[in-house]
Image (cartoon, rainbow, N blue to C red; front, side, top):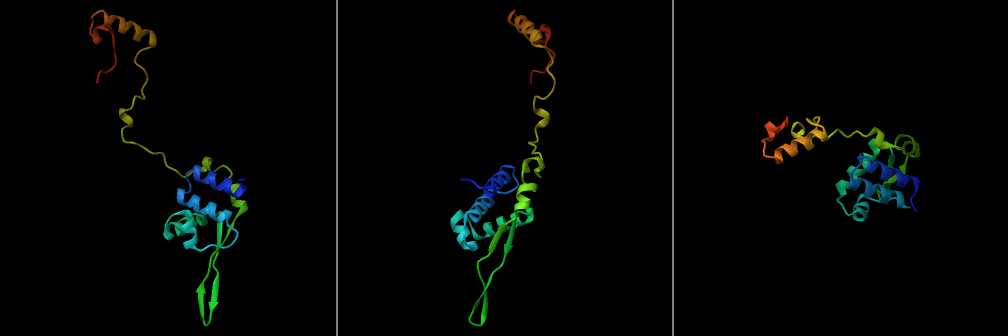
Length: 151
């Protein structure tokens, strides 16, 4: 069963605001009960530790995840423990309800837009039919009345 958090994460991924790895890591965090280390998240998501760190940083920048650092005392030394994660429901419901309408993606260009056939048609369908009949009778395209380019 999909929760509201998981649905918001999937919608954010579909909108292109987070990567596939970030989606996997956030879904694992949403399903986990206890705090998880970067290493255990990386194992579960089948990615590197750095990818997990980047995914969590990306979610924090979007404002949907809050991370708390845990420190553990071992003898006289303090060591880093597992991080705690909390999803910010207000951000999930308000900001990311329909993220595709506010996507930060730029339109992609292929560089050959001028070569694409995006112009108006030089002839109506009826004129094309007449030109084809004339060309079938043996006239050249120019003599048949064709106004487009043949290249």
